Length: 158
Image 1 (cartoon, rainbow, N blue to C red):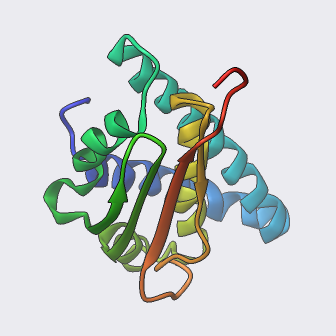
Image 2: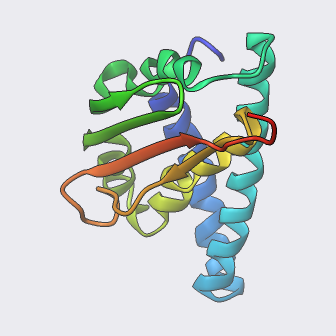
Image 3: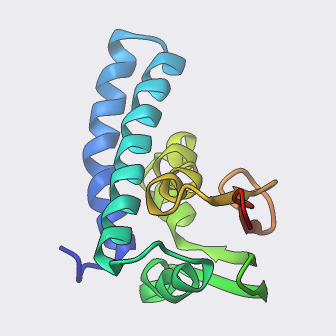
């Protein structure tokens, strides 16, 4: 499954989670159903980040993260414009997001942010807890682009 493009993985996950979400909405409020989906996806993202970090064999840096970005871009899933990249920061904009397009086409636009966007910061928690993501807008929520701004937290003694 590690060879499978992430866009394809997300489609499979969304197909299953979409059914679960719609069933939950028949038994509880939309808000509560979204909280449960969000919590489950958060746990998954943290685990996936930790697994990718473990595969590296060292504490991941922003350069390591930049090197794995093509995994999310595979099959033209994301079009990214890198603005700045060094040891302490990585800044880029996503100008096209096929993940967003896919969720909307699947009728899951209302939870697309839970299935993909919210994963981004959670992934960092597992990958390297010293990585912080700041993002003020997403295509999923109607913006023209997603603004990803990653920073490494300053650790004591540095």
